[in-house]
Amino acid sequence: MDRIVCGVWEIHLQRRLLAKPDLMLQKATEEALASEAVERSAQEIRKSSSLRLARNPVPVHHEEASSNEGSSSEDDDVHQTKRERRKFQQKSKGQPECAGCGGNHSRAKCRFRNAICRCPSGTMIGQTDSPTRRKLNVTVLIEGAPCDMEIDTGSALSIVSWSTIKRLVPRVSKRQLDSHHVHLRDYQGNDIPVVGVGRFRIAFKDFSGLLQLVVVE
Image (spheres, rainbow, N blue to C red):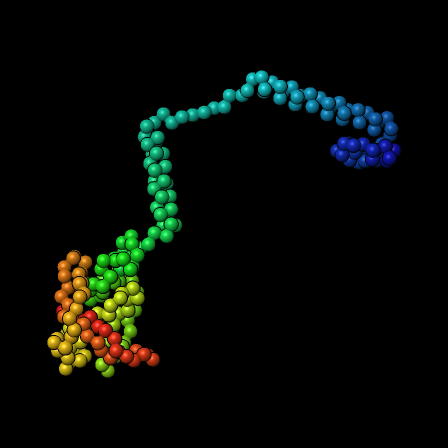
């Protein structure tokens, strides 16, 4: 009897038969025939349902917004998403942002790269004048006198005011400065008067040598 039960292909029927302690051949045959009949009926029902659905497809309920206000709200969301996507794509293209004025150009092409800001902080226009921007100052020696200077890595010129250079080097006069071809402007486009250009001995860490300074009023 165990061999007959193990030969049953339907696993659920097989387990059900093995669970019966006093299984007889007639009982096993009846169980097998009943299970086969149930499976055959289930297949016919599934086949009949598939054919009926193919002939008469079930309508799908579809609703459209009848309120213009709701439609407008959805349109606004779509437009907002598109704008944010375009903004992200522009940033991902590596659009340069000037570290000086914040414009859409490289630092080297900034028109204010070599200008001096007239704001109370006295920073160079070569750097964005923002309270959140971290300023880097170093102390250098100009003709042996200490001077705190703000570093601007993008500037091609070293600029110092006439009052500062006169305080550090009292013996210097404006006539000792060389003529200049430097044209500086502030943020408002106003010209910044340049006194001249001079070479001064600069010392910083291990460096010591003559460097050119642009002296402005």
